[in-house]
Amino acid sequence: MKWNRIYALFVARNIEFVRDRSALAWSLLLPILIIFVFAYAFTDENPEKFKVGLVAGTALDGAAGEFRETRYIKFLEFDEAEPNLHKVERHQIDLLFDPSSHRYWINRTSPNGYIVEKLLIAAYAGSGSTLQKTLVEGDEVRYIDWVIPGVIGMNIMWGALFGIGYVIVRYRKFGVLKRLSATPVTAMEFLSAQILSRLWLLLVVNVVIFIGMDLFVDFRMHGSYFNLLLVFVLGCVNLICCGLVVAARVSSEEVANGLLNLFSWPMMFLSGVWFSLEGAHPWMQKFALLLPLTHMTDAARAIMIDGAGLLDIADHLLVLGVSSIILLFIGARIFQWE
Amino acid sequence: MSIILQVFDLVKRFGSLTAVDGVSFEIREGSCFGLLGPNGAGKTTTIEMMEGIKRPDGGGILYRGEPLGEQFRNEAGIMFQTTALQEFITVREVMRQFSRFYPHSADIDDLADRYALHEFLDQDTRKLSGGQKQRLLLAMAMINQPKILFLDEPTTGLDPQSRRNLWDQVRQVREQGATILLTTHYMEEAYELCEEIAIMDHGRIIAHDAPDALLAAHFDDVVVQIHAADIPREIGEREFDAVYRNGSAHILTSDVNKTIEHLLHLDIPLDRLRIRARDLEDLFLELTGKELRA
Image 1 (cartoon, chains in turn brown, red):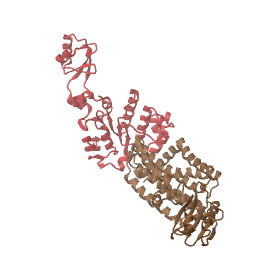
Image 2 (cartoon, rainbow over the protein chains, first blue to last red):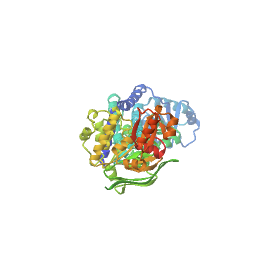
Image 3 (cartoon, chains in turn yellow, cyan):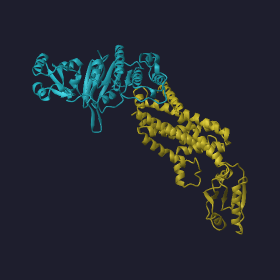
Image 4 (cartoon, rainbow over the protein chains, first blue to last red):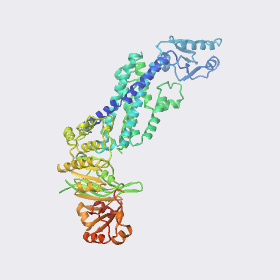
């Protein structure tokens, strides 16, 4: 590995990116537009229905069974109450109910919680059982707070996959790679330069977006900026390596496009960028864990919304780190200049 | 002179097609070696294997007695038949980028002087004319001050003026002591630049020597060419065994005086008569039965 060669490729790629005005503008504007649409279109309107968490275990009969039949409430089943209390705190669910002990938890500031509580009490009227109420404190997590980490993650995903995958395939198709292969540049040097250049550009672009949004939209950031940067760097490297694997051999833009879309669209909808996978089918939740964007988005959310530290998100960082190394190894191994 | 590059039993297959079929030759240091042949003869595949771009399916290539490696990469200058450059980048930037790839790079301004790049040094590489781009690609191939320069059909598609300029530049490179391997389908180009040529057809070398030696070995006659309209076909074929092509009757003779006397005797008008020595074009036709640029 010679650093001056990597540097030469790095500089050339950066120049190309910055001079390609339309692509640059698009990568900056798209996420900002999306955020603004969500900030102003959905602020006053909660797109979710009522959500009630039920602690499973006992068969639901009598009053509990009647409550369970209430229409327009989405019931989510949990094994235990304690680990899910933060969902009530964050207004992710409106009420948590444990039918075996007749206990329920609501957030005093949640209007939905107030209404669902009325329905629960009505169902129990005349049943003979006494409900036990516990109040939980916590600010509401608005949709905008929730969606911003996802949108930044999504922007990184598109930039990483297409900025690497598509660009390298084009280089190969038009013979740019062939010319480089006739120089002392090695595949590893070329790939390192592409990774570094894309990582650097994506971080700059997304920091600009983050600052820009911070000026106009009030959103929640409770954790450390350093930790957040670390998550985005790792996620970015991971997605770049996915792009490398796609671009390692393909020389047709159409095939590359198809493969990249095959990677990106499932992530777009199944990584929890736009809506929580809470209550989704278990296999879908398991599948989501295979997607790097899920880990990046979840970790970023944990930092921004709950102020999580590195230990709290260690599993996400581990998954992203280890799979990056594996993907990079595969990508470099199967890479072909022509 | 020592051998700089040696190729032996080189084979390359693409599916069922054998593009290069057991090619062997040696290139002497400081010489200009020409690889000649029609389109599809296997020239580009051969030169790309020698450049280390394509992997041979059989045989081998030795640079200074060693398989192609780091030393070869640092000392070889390569100009492909067609090369795309990165987009949104200027001529100066691409030169600077490539100069950083090598341990001993030439000065960019010197190269710009030598290959007349100054007028478009700060232009986007996509906005160059054919001749300008060819000069840039040659300058890029020269950026590492190569000991061996590969030129794959360097003048294809250029106008005659640009072609002559490029020939001059190639001669300058040779004067500086570099070895050159050139492919072309212009016989004139090979004759002008190379002291040794190999003619390829169907993936094999069918003749290999100095151009004049090849001509001397195959021909002891000259061509008397008469406009086809001036000599009826049946007379030409019967009396002179003439070959009619490209609007002319070609009569081969080792005694020009006698042939002309015979033509005068038959009242053939000689206003459009031309006598020329046999050239590589004829040699190719003789060897393969087809024309080079057909």
